Image (cartoon, rainbow, N blue to C red; front, side):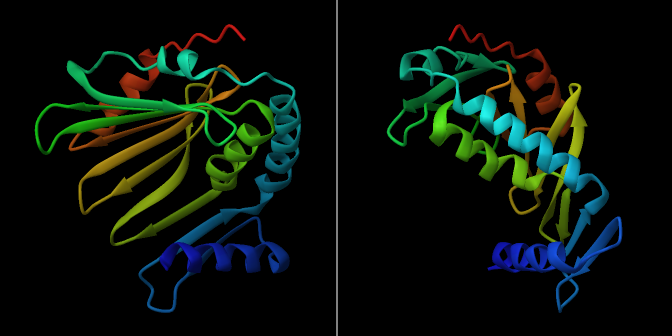
Length: 197
């Protein structure tokens, strides 16, 4: 419900706002959303160009995505994984458990082709220039590895999540429960996904 509220506020704001940066609060004041309109046009132009480039690429196979999931992260062994291309784009995910309360969840999407480029837009570009915060956590856009990443924090289970791009076609999400944000950042920086297609 809160996400719907946030997106409704954002949609309304996009039509009427003229300030370079505006913060919108919910009626109860618990949720705040900030939008940087000054950067929005550049972001939109860049997004459209990127989507057209992605549509021209051949999607990776399930085996190619599976090969990108390392057997170990931050000293934790991979406990399970799955990979599929059932939705028209290849995706793979793996979980690495230290114990019952400490784990890392890695997801990789290949954003090539029509379906993949749509996933890229929905889960990455729509969150650019947007920040939200409430008593349960926050979501914000940050500078990361020479580009942009979406940083998210959920207080109830002490989980940080980073969503970023790699090799101009992969969207990577790494989430750590009871894992420090700096550790996730270091893991992300150490990853080297090879794409031959």
